[in-house]
Every structure is written in structure tokens, then in C-alpha cells.
Picture (cartoon, rainbow, N blue to C red):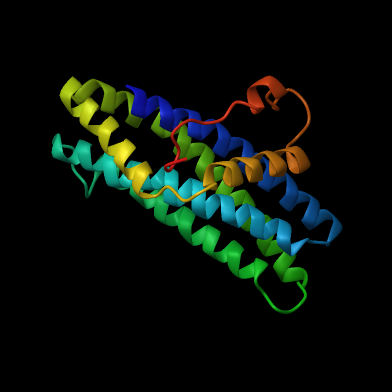
Length: 205
């Protein structure tokens, strides 16, 4: 199912940026110095790519298709996934508020940023694992081929409607810069040959 594979590939990029966010927050907490523009860049990616583009396709297309196929919306996997999305939005909103604070950060702000980043990273890792291992396989099993093709077409339309100039280059370029500056070194890092591969069809990109 091409639509599901697109979402899975987007998950890989999201996880790398989330890891970079967590690493940067640890640095900020340790050094008690922050670059507000850097925090704002993370917020831009999380709000635009993760929420508007990725979660937008899930909620407006895939979850709707599963609901039409008989999945309950007020309990079970769909309700849990939407709750996760809402919690993530609240965390990003609080990080944004810190990045836009007029005054210099105090001790509480540094600690708050570190805690929010950790909470968001923990949330996204668990959320993505459950989607990859539970929800997406359920979708591939329970949606007919005709329904799957309809999801793929609605993904295409969703992306076309949200196409905005060079958004693809901007968001992916932003992600790669954040990962390069703050991604953890070592075995958890993907090789450059894989990092350079774009994620296809994300939000009309």
C-alpha cells in the first residue's frame, strides 16, 4: 500500500529530528544557554511537517477511511492515535511559547524546555511504534484494494491542495540541518547515503 509506505518513510525522518531535538535540549539544559532561533526551527518542523503534513494525512484520510470501514472513532486505535496527536500539539505549543518569550530564560525555562523535549520525544517514539506495528498493518489487512486505492488518491489530493512553492526543499533542508547540528553520533545515526534520500509525497512536496 503506497500510502502506508509514504507514512512509514515520513516516520523515519520525524524520528531523526526528534532525536536531534532531545539532544539539543539536553545540551541547553546542561550549558544553560539557548539559541531561540534554533528552538523556533524545531518548532517549525514539528508544526508544519509532523502535524500539518503527516498527521494531516493520517487524520483527514487514513483514519477517515478506517472509520468508514467500521473502526470505532471514540475508542480503540483511532481514538488513541488522535489523543497522541493532540498531546503532541500541546507540547509543541508550549515549546513555541518558550521560543517566543520576550525575556531571557530563567532556570525554570531551561528545565521546562528539557522536560518538554523529552516528553515529546517519548510520545513520538511510542506513537510511531504503535502505528508502524499495529495501526498500519491493520489498515492494510482490513481495507480492500479499492479502499486502499482511494486512500492513495486522497493522499495525492491532500498533498496537491497544500502545495506551497518550495516547501519541500525548505522543510527537508531544515530537517537535515537540525539533524546535522544536533543528531547523536554513533550507531543510531543513519549513513549519509540514506540521510540524503528525500521522503516522497509529503504534504504536496
